[in-house]
Length: 332
Ligand code: NAI
Image (cartoon, rainbow, N blue to C red; front, side, top):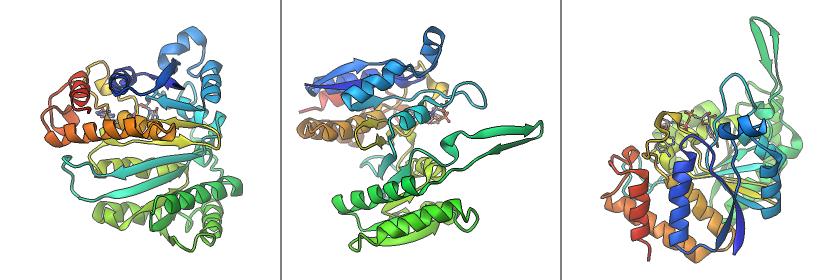
């Protein structure tokens, strides 16, 4: 048995978490869940959306599965997600983006991986109101964080038999910050002659991704570009409902979907749990429960390919619960 921290989050979080926990239980995953509430629902009781007990639990267990948590726009608390990534130094945000058989999209054979720096850039949260009509935000890029994310990207490429790493920046405009990022990636690229190294500006990348996504393999990006390009890539493979992710540090890993708490469909039992389930499958592989992970993955792909029981975002009309039950039925 492995103890894993479980953060059900808020919005659609608890609904998709219930579905995923039921699927993992049916597949006989050897997990003891250490359930830790966080987000909007705990603010009133505990005075913060991210109580210290959540961080302590992840530090102790070293691995977590996390559903989305709401961040109020323009006011209130700092994002729970950003705080968590910083507190645990989860410096790499890994977001594989691959077509799933049966999900109709504009392109076939999209198979790329986003490696997003997770601790700095405009996410440092250093902002101030200069006067009523002017505000500023400081973009921090450091050599340390850029070198380690580059190392992570090349190492990932090597271990996963990937061919090419693209460094993504806007170094023509942000000459110092993105320039530093780019120089660091170049430095690391020299240590990996087996991997082809290329550079692209983020605006050009966006245009090329929506025309020829098959031209890309591993992308390494500073935090903000990584965030935006991740959602674009989720769109390429069929939407946020199926886009998985993981935040990885030297000692700990938090697996979570790319999508947010989707307040527009909260409480309706219609959200697609696939993105959280794919994140959970990666988590199972991380804790070396590979057979169970494979069984769930096969069942999920079968369920989607058969297209009998699908959620609304995949053009079906099943509820979250019905979709999860179909996956359970298809387990071996
Ligand atoms: P969102 O990702 O929650 O939703 C965008 C659109 O995708 C919505 O129309 C939503 O209904 C749909 N969608 C998202 N997940 C889906 C699913 N599993 N199945 C079917 N449809 C799905 O993005 P939004 O609305 O910009 O953000 C809402 C909140 O989530 C914000 O407070 C934001 O800060 C937070 N957020 C949290 C994240 C996290 O916890 N890691 C990541 C991104 C956003």
